[in-house]
Length: 157
Image (cartoon, rainbow, N blue to C red; front, side, top):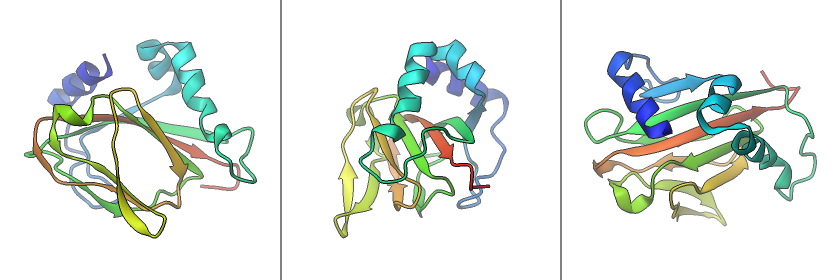
């Protein structure tokens, strides 16, 4: 599974620093071919279709590139992620385990003029514009796993 893959990779290499907050990132970057090998072509094709389903004007039919990584949060390693926006057109965030499998570590977002908690089950995917502020609250216990995809339009770095 993806959770096993990221856990095994973290045992080998976990010293990179995140460019959002300067903390250890506890993530494994993936290529599209690697993700397809891990989860299959149909799953990746469904993930790639999510930004196109948003009811937003100007959603490109093709993206210049898609960055993807697996992230692991634990109280003693990567306990949280501060509020931030992403430097891409759209973000897809897939829960690789359910919120009831760990304590804390909730996905938070700002919409409708307030901070809101997004409740997710294993396999649930959230998709939002990169300009939407979001965060992960502090982990208390357990391990939280997610798959993140950054969709970059042709006019983005």
